[in-house]
Image (cartoon, rainbow, N blue to C red):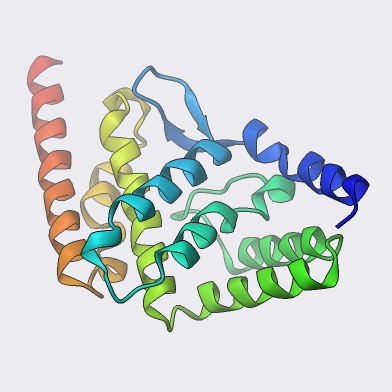
Length: 190
């Protein structure tokens, strides 16, 4: 990859630092898509020992690139995302990747295809962690940032994707307890 192509691609995905997500930080500001992807990659790295048969380096890559399309489309919360939004994101990913040299483009297209199919252990772990990160973010954020529907969503979101392993299933249950405790404590204080 030439230095110019390298710089130009980084300029395009820089928008991931600018585009905010629906989630808020513990200090009450909206998080960026890049912050979500970074913490998701850290989560994958930290659970390496829980999944000895899984290629964690591949999972980390998935976590880092999974929202590339949002550099062009912005973030739409999962509970509002339509098939049209998903298609627009897919088109955006292909547009971004088309600017890369063939070897990098092919590697990332293959990775995105694997992620979308959710048929490998790596893709399943990435998706479970992606859902889990959103729940953790909501639990860290002030309850005042939650939409009314999120009181239910935070208790159910990602449950199906977390079923693929005992560890992610147990983590999801722990987060549900955290959500319930947060709701109860903040209602009591409020």
